[in-house]
Length: 118
Image (cartoon, rainbow, N blue to C red; front, side, top):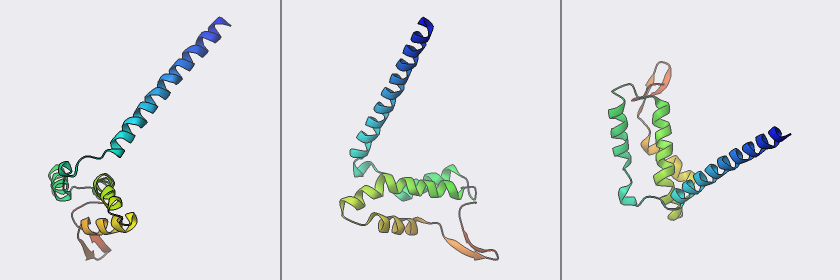
């Protein structure tokens, strides 16, 4: 019986530590989301693209990495400005994705993006 009570106390304490860590993580995330970085410290998309191209030598950039990076850039830097100026978030997203997409060319198998590999 004593062993059972001790085990229950240890599990309860572990659960409280995990809950506390999750709450601290949520608070840190919210603080960052509420107070975005000042615009002058935000990298330009062209700078991010240059780093991506440098990191992945020519012809080796996975399309998935490129698309994920564009989405993250939009969420972190573009979306807040669009909302602040009263623009539609979805329309702004579509325009940003269209403007930053890689060029495409027609091939025998259909339209293919240039600059990344599937």
